Amino acid sequence: MEAKDALKIPFEATKKVIRVTKALFAPKATEIWWDKGIKRELHYRGKHIINAELCIGCSMCARACPVNCIDMVPTGVKKPRAVPKVRANECIFCGLCEDACPTKPEKAIKLTDHYSMILEDVTWDKLTEYTFEPENLDEALEKAKKMEELLEKKKQEALKKKQQAQQAKAKAEAGKEKPLAEKKPQQEGKPQKETKGEE
Image 1 (spheres, rainbow, N blue to C red):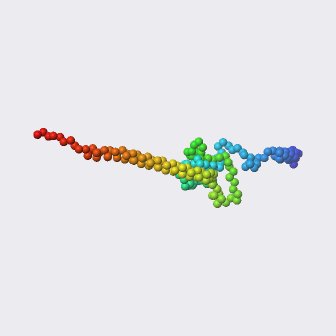
Image 2 (image 1 turned 180 degrees about the vertical axis):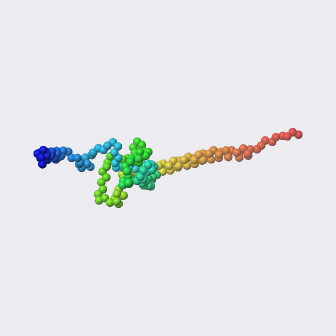
C-alpha cells in the first residue's frame, strides 16, 4: 500500500464521523404528523366529506365516478331520495364526484386535505367495510321529515280553504237563484187582461 492510499483512510473515516455528527443534530426528516396540523397542497385530494343536508339525491356523483365506487343509499324521504356512500378501498381520489355535484355554492360531496385514514390489523374484510358516509345523516333525515310534514300540513290547509271557498261560492249562487225562482210564479199567477176583439 502506498503512502498516498494510507493517508486516504483516516481522511475518509473523518468525513464519515463528521456526516454522522451533523445528522444527529439536524432536524428530523420524518416526524409524527397527525397532531401537527400540516397544511396540504392546494390541489391535494384526501378524505371525502358528504353533507347530507346539502345533498339533493341526484346521483350525479355516482354517475361521474370512473371506478363505480359510489353507492346511492335510499333514505326513505323525498329529498334527498338517496345519499352517496364511497367505498374507500376502490376510490382513486380523482375528484370527479365533487366536480359533478350540482349544489352551489357549497358542494354536498367534496375531497378534503385530510389524509388520516389508518386501519389497524388490516384484512380484506375491513378494507371493504371502510367507507366514507354522510356525517350528519340522522339530523338531515329528521329535518327532511319535519319539512315534509310541514309541507303536507300546509297542502291540506290550502285544500281545505279551497273546498270551503267553493262551498261558499255554491251557496251564494244557490241563494241568488232562489229569489228568482220565487218571483217567477207570482208573475205567472197574475190575471191577464181581456182584450175585446173586433166584431
